[in-house]
Length: 475
Ligand code: SF4
Figure 1: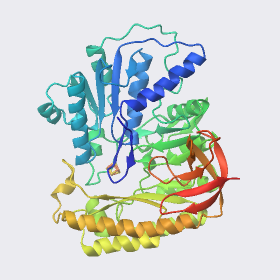
Figure 2: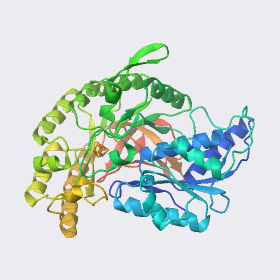
Figure 3: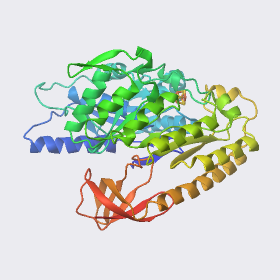
Figure 4: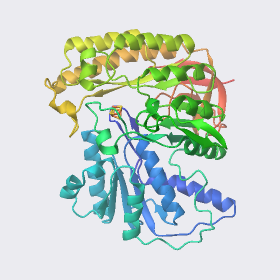
C-alpha cells in the first residue's frame, strides 16, 4: 500500500493503513525508550481518505481507540475489524471510497464506514450490504459505539500511558492540523459539504488554544489552522467570551490568530472565505505573528459565474483588497483554488478569469475541472460545459499560472529564507519555506544536506528554481 500525496486536481488525500500505524509505532518506540508499555488490545485497521479535515477526524477517532486500549495494525489480515473514513466531495472521491470499502470487505470482511460518504447510508449498503455499520461525518461517538458493539473493549490498565497528551497525530511530528470548527453556513452551489456536515459549529476557543499548547509541547513547529470556513470562526456563537488560562478570550478569528501567534510556532491559515473580516489578520502577518500566507479559494472571477456559484462576486474589489494586503504585508503569499468549466461558463467568462489571474499574480494556485457532485445545486444550472472544453480551459489556465509561478520563484533566487525540514534521506533534505504548505505547495531541495533533521528550521540561500520548487544551500 502506498500513501498518495494531496493532489488538488483530484481533491483528495489518501492515508492508508500504513500511515496511522507508522505514527503509532513511533509512539510505541518512544514509550518503550521512556520505560512505558502498551497493552495489546483488539486490533483495528484504519483507512483515512479525503482532505486534511477528514484526517483530523481520523486522529480523533484513533486517539479515542488508543485511549481505550485498542491496537491499530497495518494489514487487513492482522485486523479484527477495519474502519474506513470516507470522502464524498466529488464523484471520483465517492468512487474511491466505495472501492476502498469493497477492498476492505474482500480482504477482511468486517468493516465500519464513517465520514462524509456515511450520509449516503442507503447507497453504500446497496453496493456493499455486508458492512457492519455506517456512520456520518464527525460522528465520533457513533463510530466508537459501533466499534464497541462489534469488537469488545480490551481490558487495559487505565494508568498506563496509551496515548500522548496531544493525542494520535497522523502528520509528521513537526506539523499538525488544528481544526477550529465544523460545518459551513455558506451554500456554494457546487458543494454538498453543508448537507453532509451541517451548519457552522465553532469549537470553544479555550479548547482550541489548549490543544495548540499541547501540540507545541509535543514538538510541533507548524500549526495548520483548518475548518470549512476559517474566517467565520465564532459567528455561530456570536463571538462569545470563553476562558483560557484563567483569562477571558473572545471567540473570533483575530483573537484566535493573536493567541496562536504568541505561541512561537509557524501558524498557517487555510480555507479562508474571501470576506472583509480577513483584512483584520493581515497586520498580524506583517508583525510576524502569523505566517504571511493565506489560503483563500476565490473559485472564479466572472461576476456571472460567481453569482451562479453563490460566492462573493466582485472580482475588481478583490483585486483592490489583494493590493491593500500587499501594501500592509509585502511578503504575503496567496494561495487559491479555481473551478473551470462551471455550468454556464462561456469563453468570455473564462477569458475574464485568465485576465484576472494575470492581474492578481497569485503565488500558488490549484485548479479543478468542474465535475457534477450528486446532490449539488449546480447540477440544475443550464449550459453544462463539454468535457473537452473543460480540458482545454484547464490546460490554458495552468499554462498561465505556470508562467506566473515560474517568475515568482525566480525572483527568490539569491534570497536568504528560513526552511522547515520535512524529511532527510541519503541524497539530502527536503523542506518548505513560509510560502509552502505541506502536501499542496512546492518544496525546497537541499542536495547533500544529509545531517539535517525533520522539524529543524534552517536558514538557506536560494540557488535555483523551476515552475513550482526551489533548490537551496544552507548558510
Ligand atoms: S464555503 Fe462553500 S465550498 Fe466551502 S464548505 Fe462552505 S459551501 Fe462548501
